[in-house]
Amino acid sequence: MKQSKNNAIQGLRFWAITLIILSHCGFLSQGGLGNNIFFAMSGFFVCQPFIQDDYEFRYFAPKEFGRYYIKRLVRIIPACWLCMFFATWGLAFFDFRDFRSDNSLLLNMFFIKSKNHLWFLQQEIFFYLVAPFVILIIAVFKKLLGKLQLNALQMNVAVFVLLNLLVFVSYQLLPMAPALFLSGNGYPSPLRLWLFIVGMAFAYLLRIVKLIAPTVSDGASHTLEWVGSIYVVICLALTIISSDQVLSLLDSKFTGFHVGWEYPVLITYMAGGAIMILCLLSEDNILRRFLGNRLFTLIGNVSFSMYLLHFMLMLHFTQLSAYRVFLVVYLLSLAMSMAIYTYVEQPLINKTKEFLN
Image (cartoon, rainbow, N blue to C red; front, side):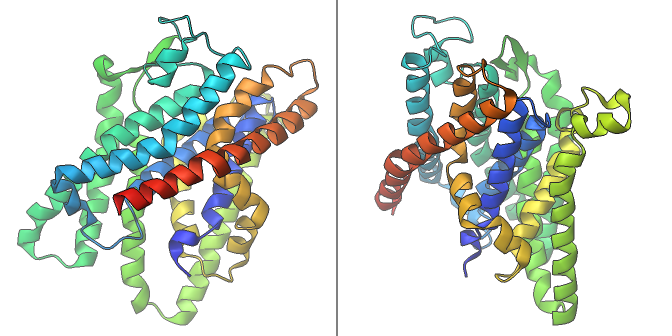
């Protein structure tokens, strides 16, 4: 089975979007943690971890930038704009006559400003704009190291170290560069590039593990798979246990404590490790089969549109109890997202693949 078809990854997307919607409806308050999972995934998969080594060298050709941006735009923009148009004329979430504030439809469409939960989308878009240049830096780095005649394992270790260094550098420098800040929810904020680069680093760690794997005995490999599975289960459990609602029962000082906002780098590193492990699990692994079940996979597939729609919808059900808001908004956003995925996203993605190939 091809690793790219591993539905456990979609199950993790289900987990993340559910945490975000629960948080916005007043439960668990782990929306920031869910966002960090998505940031790690975006960085991880932009590095094409299942493609052959040296894919980065393709970015020496300008046309590869064009191919990359076309695929990203087709994946994001149609569904995004469709949701925004509906939110404007159906839910009155944006104002098409406003050209200055966070309420502006036009400014949100082009990610110049962001309203409420759309700060996340703004971060994603600007990462995708920057990502090819980060990959180009990796390509140049590998070319320079090529003179040392490193083998594949050594090269991937070197890139892994480089990306972790970039995490530290971007974390230190970007918050000190106001000219690069993004505007959303009425205040400027830095591009959280370091969180995406964490995901990129784990894509290369996956390559390292796969290169080492043939040298590991079957018994040791089986043990490591169980250890990895336990790690992922612990991470999933911690997404609930570390919520302020649970921690505040133990000590009132944790009231209002949001681990996803307080420790985003740590959470993203933990998420990166979980993503990598899920990519390595064998087909018959119980955790992989659990997270990759049909329901979780379905919700994971449509999680992008669910993220866009749920907050816009919930503002119209505030008269209901929190439980009912969650149930109504979750099911309604799921149904609408399934329609968008089936009739907009997937057909356009397939047509784009045909065009680029």
